[in-house]
Length: 80
Image 1 (cartoon, one colour):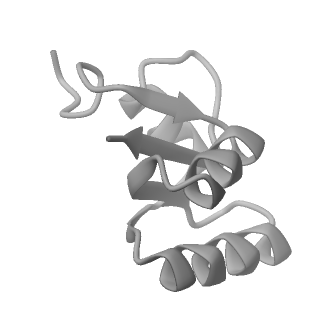
Image 2 (image 1 turned 45 degrees about the vertical axis):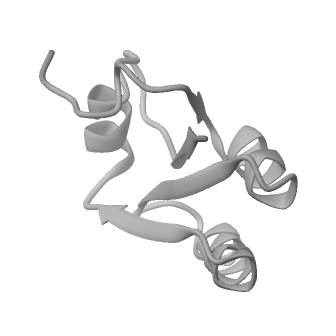
């Protein structure tokens, strides 16, 4: 497998990622830098408050591909 997080429990998409961070289930979040700036800022702040590591991808297309889906993704959370 090409992606290190294809084998892990994960959620894909901004809404699911926010829910995972809010509930304390996420330990790492990947964010696409070309996502809606307002959404990215809110998610980054939430991750900082909750102590969740954030890693950035250049684009939604790259992040979606890395997550194993055939469309772009704004965010992916790796779950504990």
